[in-house]
Length: 217
Length: 70
Length: 281
Image (cartoon, rainbow over all chains, first blue to last red):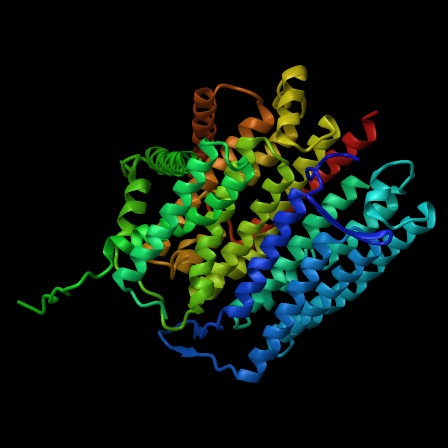
C-alpha cells in the first residue's frame, strides 16, 4: 500500500466494510468537525448590501425558519463530509459525495434571492450530472476487481482500471471544484455565512479525499 | 457577546500560556509523544495570540475618563 | 515548538516587509522599513477591539483561531517531514478561512472579497498537479522521502523545472500586491480582511507570516532538498525577492482575467503531467 497519508491510526470494521483514519484523513475529519460545530453554534450575520453608484446601503432581511432550515442542511452537509472522510468503501464514499452535492443545494435553496437561486439551480444540474461519472467509476472498479474496499484495493493484486479512477475524480470535481465551481461563487452571495462556507468546505474536503483514494488504489 | 472584562481575558491568557508551557515541559521530559505536544500547541497558540492582544488593551479596574474636547 | 512558531511568524512577516520594500524600490518609491509588517502586527494587537454588530460573532472570531491553527499545523507538518498532501489540504482550507473572514462580518466589501476567493479556486489546482508529478518520481508523498530522493538523484528543481514553476505560481497567487491577489484588491477596501480590525487583524498578520514562511520553506524542501537551516532561510529570501520583482512589474489582473490565466496554467500543467505519466516507465 503506497504510504501517502501516513499509518492507520484507527480502524472501525463492519464485516468487510470499514472506516479507517490516517493522519491525513484525521486532519480533514477534524476540520469538517470544527466547521460543523461553528455552523451549529454561530448565529448568522446581518448582511449589509450597498447600492452601487451611491452612498446608500440597506440591511437584508432574513427569517428565522429560513435560517433554521439552512442550519439543518449545513449540519447534514458536515455529517456527509465527515462520513466521506473516514469511509473505507468506495460505494459509501460516492454516496457521501453525492449527499454533499444535494445538501449544498439545500443550504442556499431557502434564500429568497434570484441570483442565488439561479446559481443553486445551475450548480444542482452540474452536481447531478456529475453523479454519473461518480457512480460509473465505482461501478467500473467493482466490475473489474470484484471489491469496493479501499484497503483491499490498495493492498495490491488488483488491476484497477485507470478509467475508473479518472471517472471517480471527475465526479467529485463536478461536485464543486474548478472548473465547475463557477456557479458556486454566486451561491456565496447568500446571507448566513456559517452555513454558506460549508458549501465550499465540503467540496474541498471530498476532493482532497478522492485524491488520496485515487493515488492509493 | 464577549464582554471585554479584564478578568475573563486574564483567565483565557493564563489557560493558553499554561497549556503551551505544560506541553513544552512534558515533551522535554519525554512524557508525551511529539504529535501530542504539537496538537496541544496548535490549539493553544491561536488562543494565546488573540488573548495576548486583548489582554494588552483590556480595561482594568478604574476606567479612564475619555477626553471630551478642547 | 512554540519558539519555531514565533520565529516562523516573525521571519515570515519580515519577508513580507522585504517584499513591500523591494516593490517600492522597483517602483522608485522609498517604501516602508523592512520590519514594517512586524510593527503592524504589534500595533494592531493593542488597538481597541470589539465585534461588529452585524457580524456572526462566533464565526468572526473562530475563523481567526482556525486560520492560525491550520498554519501552525502546516509548519509542524513541514518541519517533521510528514505527507505533503496535508500541506496541500491546509493550503486549500486557507481558502475556506478566507471565505469565513469575508462573509462573517456582513460587510459588502468583505463579502465581495469572499466571493472572489471562491472564483479564484483555480489557483489550487497547479499545487495538486505539482504533487501528482512529484509522486510519479518519488513514489511517496512524505516530505522526508522526497528529501531522501533528492539526496540520491539531485534537486527536483533540475529534474522537473515546470513543476517547480507551477508551485512558484501557486506561491505567487498568495502574495500580496501580486497579479492574482484579487481577493484583497483596493477597490474592495482590503477585500476579505476589511472588517477584521484590532486584535483580529493582528491574528491575520500572524496567519500571513506563518503562511509565507511555510510555503517558501516547503518550496525549498520539495525542490532543493536537504540544506542547512540558515541556507534554507537565505534561499527563501532569494525566492521572495524574485516574487517581489514579478509583483512589482505586473498589474493586478481583473478577476476574470486572473481566473482565466490560472486556468490556462492549470491546463498546461495537466498536459505536462499527462506527458510525464505517459513517458515514465
